[in-house]
Image (cartoon, rainbow, N blue to C red; front, side, top):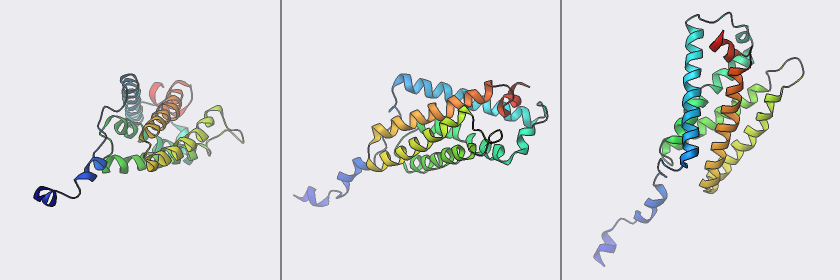
Length: 183
């Protein structure tokens, strides 16, 4: 009886505050996230370094405020998203950085609506509604405690709306990141 009285009354709540751990992604998904995120981060750093050191031609893209804003919000999403997917989950830092990442992703998606030729949007704008939907579901599932669905939405947003358009931004000739990396 004495042990029950002197024990910590909050001990039962401890398991709800424990972080989920680091190995919550399957090996294939984890490898895909690590490889794509690390390579994309390295390529972004290389492209930015080339531009800052003057190894690229004149960059008229940077005269467009929407392009500058888009690049400034999307580039931090790559290493931040990678970190959030491979680091310890459930900590206060994870939650705060996750909110920042989702806000950056929504801001990035919104900024693309101001980047177009004339009045027409391009095929790459298909990722905007995908990003809005996934961002809403990320918040909804986290608040509901559905961590499995939360994780699935984050991985799909990271790979589907960040890595795929990122790859195209480097391989399509004439795009800003292509010019910064290859010209």
